[in-house]
Length: 475
Image 1 (cartoon, rainbow, N blue to C red):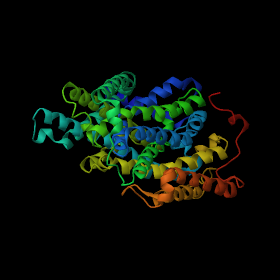
Image 2: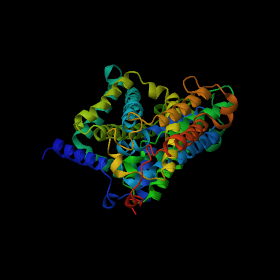
Image 3: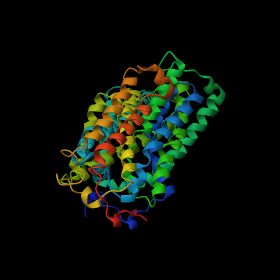
């Protein structure tokens, strides 16, 4: 059997499994497994970018607080999605029908999650190109061979080929590459603080993103809140394989929350001493073998990060559109080429992550409210029915009250704070609680009232649940 056939067969099986509830025998991820898998995201490229941007906003002690609070607190409000998915073992492409409707789910995949993941993918791909460019500069190599965009295309091509021809290698990345990256990160963290000293780094006051230091601190929190709110459509990848609902909740929270924040500390320190938001240049002043080691670390982490998000995009496309071949689904990631030539997500990371916080924060909280209203139950027969006769069809296939509540939340968040200009319009509110967090709570409250009045009494989207389905699948 050829490598291509082996990969296609594996992906085909994965897609079939993704469209069906996972069986108890297929749930192999315990609490430790869940934490380690989420940590593999934490030590990747995005942690470095977030840390560097946070370090440029506020001094080290406050930057650490911003990361811990921003990454952990918002995520806690979304984490009920994990146990809900673990209970029923369904992929996002299926279970989201219960809250958004079948057409609403399709719109979310096309207009929200896929563009977001393409943006996330572009960040490590662009960073890889700039890393190679900088490394060749140390060797006095110039000209076309040192072009950053060229090496970004190379990184995208390598990640694409790995997923196309040998997607099975993902297990290798999680089991071998992740521990190596963690070790390298620990060594580099030691070098940063031993070279500059904690007291020196802690006394550095960056220029910030606003003339008022407190507003700049709140902007740092808003960026981290955007990261904390960015996971609602990532839970299903692993939570549907969790052995328990507890592992799905706390495993994702610890891995994507506090541990992610802790992993940001070296990037915060590096950003402060280097005075840049681009992680490529964090260790430039240290020089010597440490720069070589750091560049090697970035190269591995960037390819790994790109593979992770490209796989999610392609697999989601195959779940939603099963007739797509693996190559066709994977080719959606080639849209990243646009973001290599115009690296908006990378160069304007603070804007990118804060905007998706304003978009996904309300969406995730509204979904959690919906989960609470339905007491974590779904009708397994109706959830697969996408016809007009389905109990989850709502209106023309869309839960308009879900959409309205999400729009209300996003509009309020963007009204309070403009992530493009980094200017708060309602400063009195932003100084106290930011923008995305209060807006998400308002969106959730709005949906609770609307659903209780218009949906639940009429059983629109809330069909009767057979007694045998009320027990968790994994219990």
